[in-house]
Image (cartoon, rainbow, N blue to C red):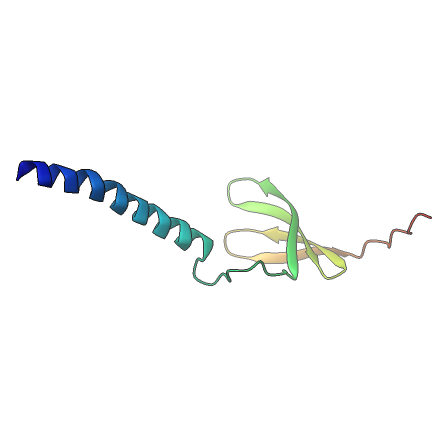
Length: 91
């Protein structure tokens, strides 16, 4: 009787642990609001520099423009806008 209990324990504990690991892995891959496939994003954060404890400067690429934003705890402000010059193709 005790041997059967120990065998069940040895078999079921790794099975339950593996199922928990698989569930957490799937949850991370398909978080709410995220599609299972990679989406193309319209907005890309190029760089961000911290300014003190709560603020930062961020360069965001949107379309063909780069936007310099001031981001703090309560607000986001546009500081500058720049359109990079087209790089000529080399022959």
